[in-house]
View (cartoon, rainbow, N blue to C red):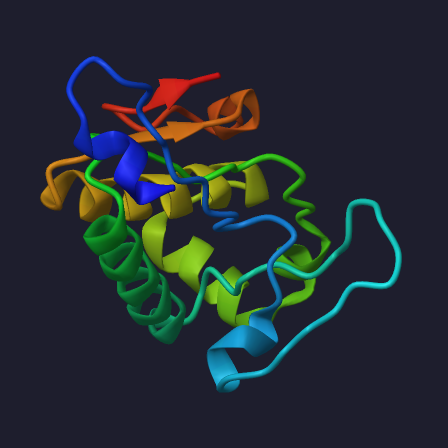
Length: 143
């Protein structure tokens, strides 16, 4: 659908990436094909404590931005269970280092980190209303 965004006065195709929610941490370990056989909200979530998470997501954002000329990028941000972050020593260390009081603030920090990169690409971040939990990213659009 990227070609839809190439024509003036036509619908804008806004790409939607599921950045923090319903994402498998294993995706960062190399190419795999993951097939979910059930539906619902799952505890799998990208580790907010690992710098490699952001290197991976920055690369995904680069690829999506190259495909879609839209000035917006929808990251989702909903259905982000915090159970992994609450138990993960790497995430807990990140929270301590950043002075974050809980996992909601960690999600806000995570979204703000992604937003800075999205903004550096000349795009505006869009997310579902759950990105409000813990504090809103400064330039984000909320749906």
